[in-house]
Length: 306
Image 1 (tube, rainbow, N blue to C red):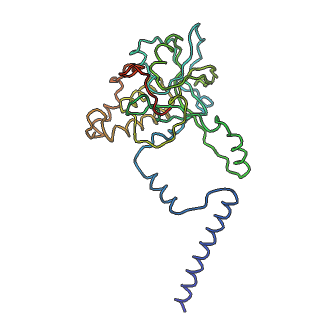
Image 2 (image 1 turned 90 degrees about the vertical axis):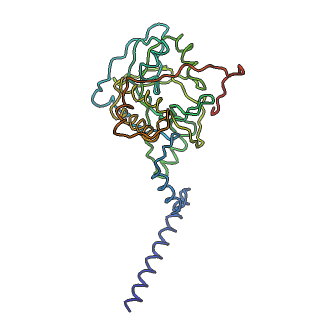
Image 3 (image 1 turned 90 degrees about the horizontal axis):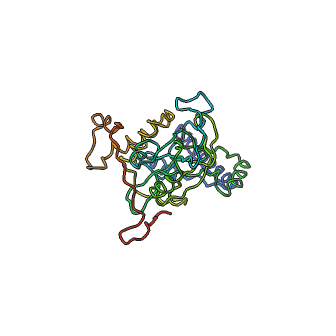
């Protein structure tokens, strides 16, 4: 009798689980959602456990309201814009002073700032280079058709989009340096004007920023990755400019993760404890020269991803 009772209990539990799954899937179909699939959930878990970095994924946004709380060490009053000068928002290798020293560009002022409703990705491709570079991507709230989708989410109670932002620095440079130096360095980019907020809480309008891949969204998977040399320039730049500590830590994580796998220069494995101090040493930085705008056949450099 006990055996029969146990069998009945097991069968009842299996039937209950089956009914729950059917009800959930029916609800999802009524809400125009995808049915629950155990295999896809397992697959997603395996993908999340992978140590491979997805460089075409938004880097974690942190401290997007840094100026609404206690003033940061980097908070400073915004200087008045000089005649024939502009503000340029930098988020990659141009955050620090090394690139400006190499290109002989005179920077009048550098002010930490935040670009809201954007996220940082490493999906910028320049010419035929086999590495990717940093890019800022407008969040969904900035794209066409978002309002209609948002209303649908509100209707079905699925609101909860994460706030996105990118920390960086606005540099006051001359218009001629912007056009003659950076327009050439930022190949396959499109320059637009945006509004940023300084760490001091001031809104700064008409700030120039470069969008990679000529402003097009590149969502296809790829195996390319940024150079450790490049990630080091970013980390040392955000550290030099005293950007938010949480953001500096995120850039540090990316750098160490890239370095711990393989050294980009000699492809030998690195011992973390011995070489971590070396990779975080900001006295040794390497800046690439401004690339030519034409190839060997005197044709304009191809933009493969935009």
